[in-house]
Image (cartoon, rainbow, N blue to C red; front, side, top):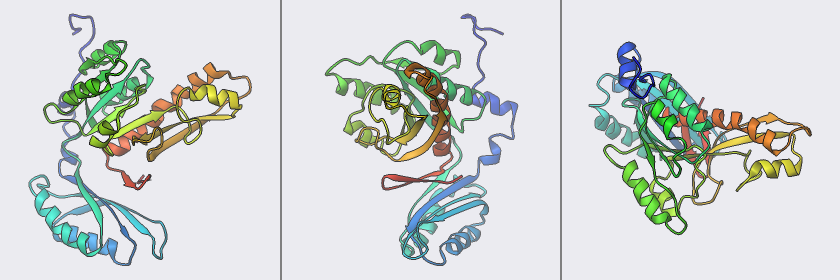
Length: 312
């Protein structure tokens, strides 16, 4: 039945899971271990033996090495283990012994409960709309908890999907105050695990970025490192490019220079002006950002310096 504002109510993720009971329990006891370490023989065997000893069933394992001799080794293991949440500390302590011996940087992540996501936007809604649609359809493996914007334009879009919308205007010289209000929202309750800049047209302070290091994803409307900064479609048009692209990357203090997660391109021709390129580019931006967010939420992205290893 439509609500009093004329919009049909959007079922929450909990309601969707009750309609499809198999959706959530299948991952309730699923864990993921991400590893980086110096390459050497026996790493895969050591990890598999430990998980077997704990009663885990490995459902997927992916590895990558930069060089078989003296290189770095990266690994993602996905496994099922009964009562995993209750045994998380026990598993972590057991794994620490192996990690110390093999000089590993590692982390254990649980697939459930889903990670909490906040989206920061300005006026353009195509990327936000993509995330909202995927969240509503159950394709986003996380919980979209709030949308924060420096404009009011996209409030109705968030409301139509039942997502809380918060307007925090920006004023020249008041970035510290603005970010303080944003942090209060982001850290309320259980806090958020990921911040997505879905065409949020403001530069974040180094302090804000440092506070959420490795947990902010931005979509840049260019195939970085080409055409960084403002108005990249005009830059691309002026340069006469034949392909345009978009880049999803983690945010660092260096503008548009953080570790790249995903990129894609589409062809353009001499007949396309800057506005045509902007229109085509929106298609790429929304898809690239959605893929990057999903991969992060599924713990498929491993940071290594200013690069990423993305497990398929």
